[in-house]
Image 1 (tube, rainbow, N blue to C red):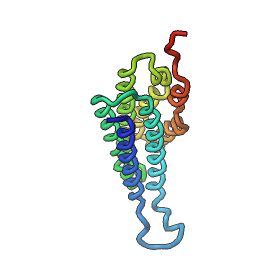
Image 2: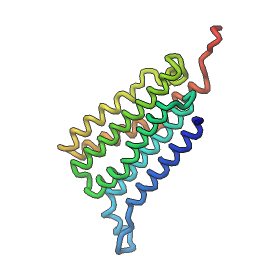
Image 3: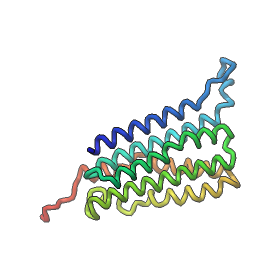
Image 4: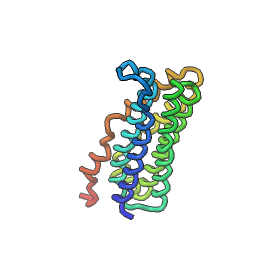
Length: 199
C-alpha cells in the first residue's frame, strides 16, 4: 500500500465525520425567522469547535503522512486508532450541544479529544521509528511542545468540566487556537531536507 492510498482513505473517513456532524444541525420544525434558530446555538457552537478540530487533524495528518517513508502494519493500525477516536467526535459534539454544555457530556468530549491526541502521538511515534532520529520528521517535530502540552490541557479540562463546563470548553477552544494555524514544521523540513552527503 502506498502512503497516497492511506491518505485518501483517511481523507474519506474525515469527510464522513464532518458530514455526520453537520447532520446534527436540525432545521427548526416551525418558524421562518432568524430568531427561530436561537435554540440551536449550543449545537452550532459545538459543531464549529468540532469542525475546527477535525480540520486541524486533517491538515496536520496530511503533513505527517507526507513525511512517512513507507506504510507498515504498525502505521496502518496506528492510523486506524486515530480515526477511531476522531469518529467519536460527532457523537460527543452532538451530546454537548443537545445538553447545552452539561458537565458529563463536556467531560466526555474532552476524553475523546485527549484520546485522539494520544493516538496522533502514537502514529507520529510509529513513523519516527521507521526513519530514525535523523529523519525529516524528527527534525521537524523537534521537542514537540504543542504535542506534549495539549494532552495535559485536555486532562485539566476533563476534571474541570464536572465543576465548570464553561471553563473546560474555554480550554478546548484554547487548544484549538494553539493548533488552528497549520503546523508547517514538516512542510518546511520536507522542502529543506538534511544534507546526508557529509559535505
